[in-house]
Image (cartoon, rainbow, N blue to C red; front, side, top):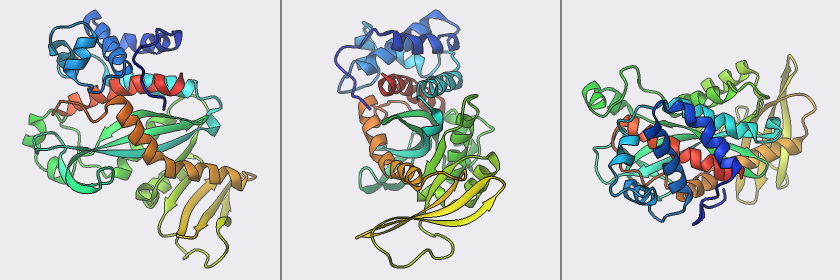
Length: 332
C-alpha cells in the first residue's frame, strides 16, 4: 500500500469514494466530519487520533471527531459494504483477486477496552494484553487493501453479559472462533454481484474443517495452508512446488500443493476448476505468506492501532473510516 502523503490529493478517485459513502450519513455534520477524518488520515500525520484529526479539520478540540466515532448516527456497516465493493469494482479481473483473512493484535496497557485479553502478539513478539482484530484483505494487481473488520471477543467476555453491555456489545453478539469470523468476512465479500475471487488463508484458518466445508458448498476456489496434510504428504524430493491430485467431483479438482524449501515443507489444500495451472496455485499460495507483512504496513500507514476508544461500536466506527482511507490508497 502506498503511504499517505503530506498533501491530500483532491482527486476524482477520492471524491468518487467519498460520494459513494455519503448517503450512509443522514446528517450533514457527521458526513462532512467523516470526510475530514478520511482526509486527515491521508494527510500523513505521525499520530492519528482525535486531536490531530481535529487540528487537520481546523477544529479547536477533538469533541467533534470523538462524537463521530461514538454517538453520531450513521450506517457504519453500510460504509463497510460501500468501501469493499468500491475496491472490488476497481480490482481489474476479480477472478484473479484473492480474499485473505488476516489479523492484527492491538496492544493495550489496561483491561478496560472491549475484548482485551492476553495472548501472544506476533507483531510485537511477546505475550501481552491485546484487542484482536480480524480483517479481510484483498490482493489484486500487485496491490493490497483491507476491506472488512471484526473484533474477536474471547469466551471470558461473551460469558459476562453485563461487562459486554457496559461497553456497547449488542445483545445478539455471542462467541465466535477466529475461523468463524473469517467465514463471516469472506461471506460478505462473496455477496458482491460480480465475479468471485479466490479465497486463501494461513494455517490458523486453513486447518478448520468447518471453514473448508463451507467454502466447498459455496463453490469457491481456494488455497488454504495446513500443517497437517491428512494423508501425511509426500516424503523427500527436491526443493520446489509439487501438485498432488487428491480427487475430482462435479467440475472441481482437489489437490495438495507442497512447497519444499531447505528449511521445511509447507502444505496447502487446493480446490479449483479443471485446467488451472499449478503456477496459479503457487501465485495464490505466495500471497498468504505476504499477507501479515502487508497488513502490518497498512496498520502503520493508516494508524489502525492509534484509536483512543474503548467501546465495541466505537472500535468499528474508527476502523471503518480508516479502511475508507486505505481503500483509496490501495486503488490510486
